[in-house]
Image (cartoon, rainbow over all chains, first blue to last red):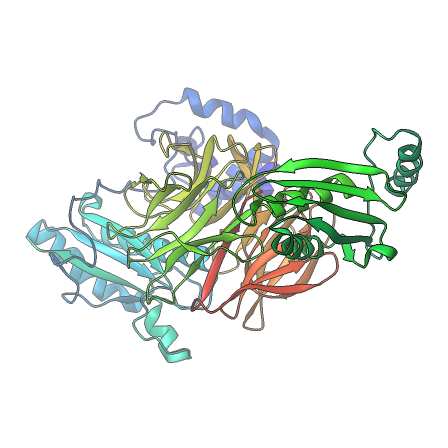
Length: 194
Length: 378
């Protein structure tokens, strides 16, 4: 019951069972893990602490991908040492943090820059105004992190990518209509000048 | 009802035992009648006005002339306020001296009256804070619960948002962008000192003190995803509570500090979840709505106020943890008062006080540009 109501089935995926199911598809693994979790329940959690595998994070899971690097002192998205016009923003659908296929070319461009120059970027996530304030700050950060994950998948190093969320603040277009909202649901790249 | 019976017994008992303070619980339809005309002394006019306003705001009283009142509030208002309440038989039910600047002593007297005569905690002495943008930037302001005594706390001309007062109203956490990133700052409202207490990589936001002030729940992204953490009171030793692909936001503590309710969004349909403050699995709370954000747990632990989005506008909703959800009107970011009866929220740029029991609404603050994200001490 607990696992069914949970919103983190992948937690169960990441330890004990993973090696066993490695040849099986991810969907099947999730299904099997969930089924097992239903019967095993809490004993899965007790095993986690004993499994000190280095593949897992300090808290014993792999859900988040790559931790953010330490911030560079004195460097921030709107600072004078950051070029915010070098790359095109990535746009998102309403209430979504999925990086769509049409935006992949922009990702590829930034990933190449990071690979070739060993530079660093700050990704700033923004939302449109149609959300409550703290929800928007969370969604903006999630958008920035989704873009960061896409960059990492395209070969960039996570250690060179910092994120920040401004929620619904600083819209690209302050109007209240569909076309403005579409422009505001975005993640912008700030290339740190070297 | 048990309470009504207790009320009658207590009233009867009070006649026999003058030392026992009567406990009166008011039901929805009935209010106590009280007169505030018996105050003398150099500050009597100001105290009387504040007292009357506070007692009306509490929702438990109707203020009437002395000859028609069940209770008479009197006393002497000078540098100290010697407050006294008698019942219609002339028996003293409350006698106490209050000190403090300006309206503070009248607010304290009002809360004492509410607590003595109804058994409920008063809200008159509590503090509120909110975001307003009339200077051109979002800054944090504090005020008294009646909307008076507005003070601008930040003057940074960067984005300052998400204020959260500690239960005792002495400290305030907020999200500020001075560094260019979203960091958590703490202001000691007594001394005015400010410290940046969380500057983890990524975004630090939504920080909220536990009811005893000893811990802070917050959304951090330092580990590469937006997750819920609990830190110590200084923002250190973050302990991660959630592990998900989606976004956790707006943690709010149970009154005993053992649990946290928050909003969780995976694909555009944020839901309320409940988790142990020590960690474990988040469990979905059924609200019957498909967009649920910015929850605030009532001090009595029985209900959660939150936002739902319906046909393009935001509504304030109340989830009864033992039952269903009801909508109380348009607005954003509802927060409970100490009495678990009143809510404040932002609507159309103003700050609204709502008596969730009667539906009575008052505008507490306006004219500061757009007001948003209120918080309320307990």
